[in-house]
Image (cartoon, rainbow, N blue to C red; front, side, top):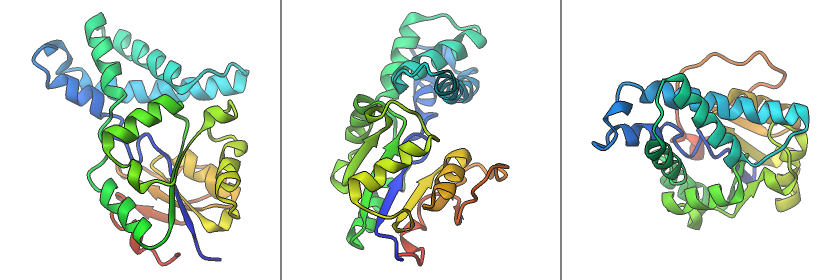
Amino acid sequence: MPVTTCVFDGYGTLFDVAAAAREAASDPGFPQLAPHWPAIASLWRAKQLEYSWQRAIRGLHCDFWQVTVDGLDYAMEAEGIEDPALRTHLLALYRRLSAFPEVPAVLASLRAKGLKTAILSNGAPSMLSDAVASAGIGGVLDAVLSVETIGLFKPAPAVYDLVGRRFHTQPAQVLFVSSNGWDVSAAAAYGFVTAWVNRTGAPLDRLPGQPAHILPDLTALPDLEIY
C-alpha cells in the first residue's frame, strides 16, 4: 500500500525550537543571555515535554502554550536569570520560530509528487498558526492538526487517529515524520510508516515501535521509495 500522506511533527521537526533563545542571545539588549542560551534552550524544551507528559498522566490537561511558558520559567530560574523583559521577548520569539532551512523545498517537492502534507502537533492552534505563517509554509500544507481538538497530548494513540479522521487514510498510507524518538516510536507502533529526523545523532529509544527510516535532516524525504 503506497504512502499518500506525509504528516510532520511541528516543534523540533519543522520548527527549530532552539531558535528563540539563540536569536534573543544575539540581541544587544539582553547581554546576560549570551552564556546561558544553550542551557536555557535545552532545559526549556525538556521541561515543555516533561510537563505535557506529567499533565497527561495526572489528567491535568492544559494547552501547549501553558507548558511552554512554564518550561521557560523553570529554565530561566535554573540558570539564575530573572528578567521580565527577556521572558516576554523569548515567548514572543517562540511564537515565530524559524523553520529549518530545507523545510519549504521539501514540502513543495512532496506536494509536487501529489502527496498530501500536514502537521500533527501538540501545539495549540494559535501557536501553530503563528509558526506556519512566520515560516511561510501555509501554501504547501493541506492541514494543520492540533491535539487541542481532543484535549490529549502525544503520544496518546487518539492523537494519531486525527490523521485518518482528516484524510480518510489507513495507517499504512501515512508517512509520519518527527525529530522526537518517542513520537516516532508511538507512531510506528500505531501502524504509520515512520521517518526519524535524527539531527543530533542520538541513539534509538528503547521503546516499542522503531523507525522505518532514519535521516539526518528532511532533505532526502521526497526521494524515499515509498510513494
